[in-house]
Amino acid sequence: MVKKQDTIYAAPLEQMVDFSFDERVVDVFPDMIQRSVPGYATLISNIGILAAKYALDNSRCYDLGCSLGAVTLSIRQRIKKQNCQIIAVDNSPAMIEKAQHILLADKASDIEVQLVCEDIADTVIENASVVVMNFTLQFIPLAHRQALINQIYNGLKPGGILILSEKLAFPDNSINQFHIDVHHDFKRANGYSDMEISQKRTALENVLIPESLEQHQQRLRAAGFGFTEKWYQCFNFVSMVAIK
Ligand SMILES: Nc1ncnc2c1ncn2[C@@H]1O[C@H](C[S@+](CC[C@H]([NH3+])C(=O)[O-])CC(=O)[O-])[C@@H](O)[C@H]1O
Ligand SMILES: O=C(O)C(=O)Cc1ccccc1
Image (cartoon, rainbow, N blue to C red):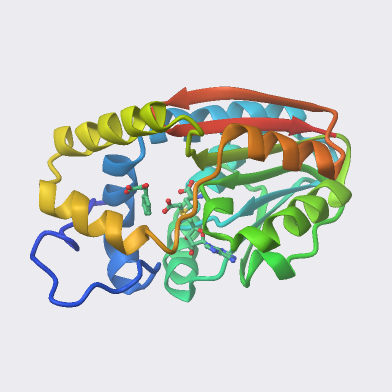
């Protein structure tokens, strides 16, 4: 796939509108996410490794907020189980349409993938051995997050895993600012201008609500998860696992 360059915030915008996963974003998404999320490629490949360890025969794997299906492709390649099905969900019709083309071109495995365009709040999670939310919970309204994590916990089989990646906020102001600054340095090193960084930051302000690691861990424990662990961090981007 040729990666089209993300220039969405390159020119000064007269009126700032909230960030959304529309056609323009979908068109440049692989370039945008790779240049914006430190460690994205590492996360994708290691989520495949984690999924392969926890996937069970005759169970389901969920990729919630699948975008173009990068997580789905990674776990599909790694899982070596009988009668395992992947359910990939996103509420952006443009994402799902493009993900459909990408998945159809993937001949690496014959594991069944069901692509669903819906709000993950409405997704019925059942018989799950693996649930992945790779940078999706951060876009869900704060008041709905506990209910979603509870639904995931209830739909997981004993021993099943939730892999949760998030952009973090830090309770200590100077630590928080340190991470924001180095993340911006990362974006600058990947070719984004100060104006692109600043305009996207404004566009994301009311849309991507980061929480602290402690808030995530507390929510996971409140849902019933007995084991939680941060397995990856690069600057303010982390990935956790929670095992039922
Ligand atoms: N309520 C919702 N219901 C369903 N989907 C949603 C909802 N809210 C947001 N989304 C979807 O969640 C995805 C978040 S991107 C995930 C990257 C992917 N996991 C990846 O590993 O490449 C992360 C990012 O861009 O920072 C978008 O596709 C939204 O449409
Ligand atoms: O770009 C950012 O600042 C981010 O926090 C990551 C991101 C990546 C893709 C879409 C939205 C946010």
